[in-house]
Length: 152
Length: 172
Image 1 (cartoon, rainbow over the protein chains, first blue to last red):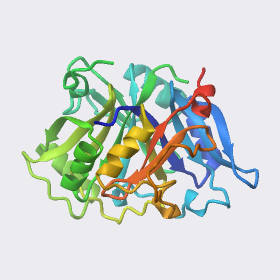
Image 2 (cartoon, chains in turn green, orange):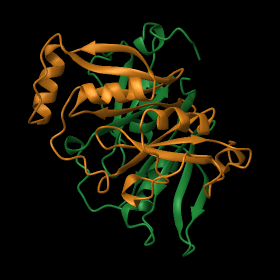
Image 3 (spheres, each protein chain N blue to C red):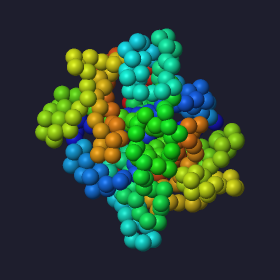
Image 4 (tube, helix red, strand yellow):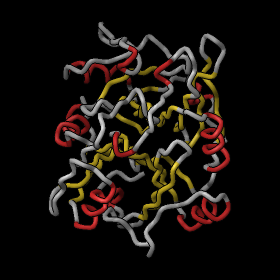
């Protein structure tokens, strides 16, 4: 029997500077803090930020009880397998006006506003720890949609 | 939240062993490969400029592939070897969680394929030594186990319950 997957539940990230990360995901990206998991020392072990129904960003503030939940490395994209994660957006112009225009966050994008090889519009931002987030706007020709016979 | 953001739509891994990682997501997890995209010269030049030392992509070879988790939600794999050793205990990315309808059924399927299930990330060294029965509920009220892909990336496989904090706190 094939496993019945229903979606991506969350992406979990360690933090060196938790305050900066929480500020980025709440104030810049606009996600609401949903709840915390608390460890035996009464410290916030994992904090949850809601992206969509049933879907979250998990941040690890780096409690003493879990030494592997914080890190000291440089988090260089070129040295790791995790390349980025991606948010679906429905209006890239409004996204750029908000994130770059209003909030001053640089948004990487093609200079001539063209679609990528997947026929979607692909833009990129980085959180304070250098984790890359793609912001993708699908088109009616996006391979992510036309290759899927089950539509959402 | 910003109303132009709709969901997390994919999580991307670059691969030192692209074939093995494709086999893991496609055959072991059983995700459907929706499409692949081949290299063009512009993409090759881009990765060379970024400094990927072992990168040897050629025009016409597959650059990336999409594996479907759910409609509009995917795992994306890049046929690009990273430079470092993917030290999953010392980088920002901790894990990605994939939701399933029935976590015990998912465990049976993976156990049948010889996959070891873990109570947390592998570095916690706490594998299930008996068949997973779903009776251990996490602090968040959900039921889950962890596995690793061939690159060492941690994947949590989770089922929500009626008591899941992810469900009880799911509102705008």
